[in-house]
Image (tube, rainbow, N blue to C red; front, side, top):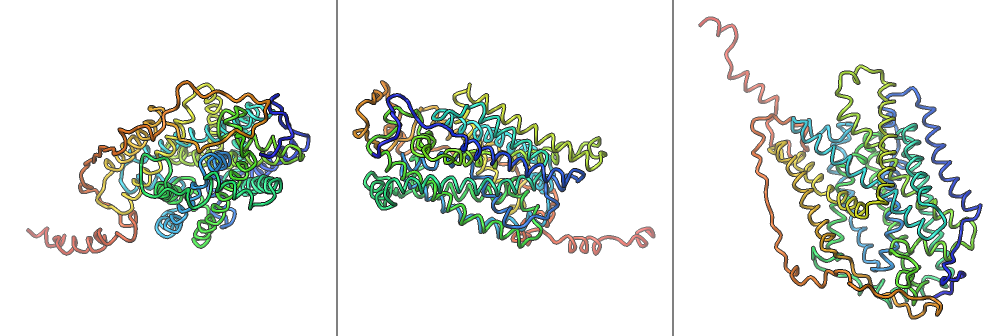
Length: 565
């Protein structure tokens, strides 16, 4: 293990310099300035400008915004932690990018042609029912609120635990600034701040890796140490599909493909971006540009993880009691190893906050769009308002959602299980939502009852799996982290009296038999489905309305003749 500059036994660690605050504050000021700029330019514009950017955006900024919307601070902290404590097998998540061409070819052109501000309006048009629209839209708003609370609170907690940056300052900085620039600047402000924040995030990861590799003498020693301790190399990959095993190549690949297809095919945040594009060609390009940048980001987090592991080989900070959670390893490393260079800790904090800001801003803008279109726009009193007044209502909705997410983040500090619950809810919605839209697009005979039941029952089953592990107290097994090289003046914590439940100890679950059920809801029962509301690949299964009309006329009485009888 490389010797630290600080005495761990006395709890000493690096602190922020004035330059760190300048770097971090500069990112916040730039983000807010972008919002103010677009607020001034579009102060008299309508909701079309606020929510869709007047459909004038190009492929590159939208592509970076799409990526930034789903690359949160949780990934920046969790990715390196995953590589450190479980190995780089999680890099297989990049296989999920094969879903993006499918989304680009199959789903995106269909929704682009509809030009809907709220994607859930399509479900009402398709099923001739507002029920499924409200169910889907409500699930989106709730899961986004919970996810935003996690995005704000988790990195703030990790940062506060290993640095002198207070938790309340982190929560307020992220929640308030993202809400303000989104509320005043609209979608264009969200997109361009996402671009800024994404490149700050990439710069922060590169800085961590470059400094670590320099200290370790290059990538070769880092890789050798990672292979030696089963953090890297071909031997770490587990094959086969085992639902109860935390990670296998098949498990990761399947979940990432389904997740990415759901994100880029039928999520409000994504489809709203498609509608903001100036042409279909730009919409296609925006999806394909995501792929290389996503792979780059995942690779950077994995490399950062094994760099940290090589640095602390023989004295893991978690096993030594210097940190209490594995997600604190990256902030600890930064304050322990990078604080000697003024500005680098500030760049790291800017990197973490950039991931949080981009996710929050995209979320509140999409939530405001869904709430306005699905609830307020249908009210006669709101429909009569001027376009400028309607835009102001939507801006206040965006600000309100941001403040609510910030409040939930503070509440998370007093509710131990809320973080796990939020993550479970957000991940449990993706599959059922994708299934609902696939039913609507490719199964013309399905009805609103089946679609609503699929959403509710599917999400309930997924939540059962997620909370089942929590209820049993199952925790993922960490790879061995030796402490034989720790300084002699460190008192190592004693092992817990009651060891955590590991999946390998649950012998009764080796061959589980999960109950399955179906929800019969009948066919469309005479409700006419418009051919334009199903995918062009299955329109042949529906009667041509022109031919139907011609047939009706051919078999009906002539009005003049019928009066003679």
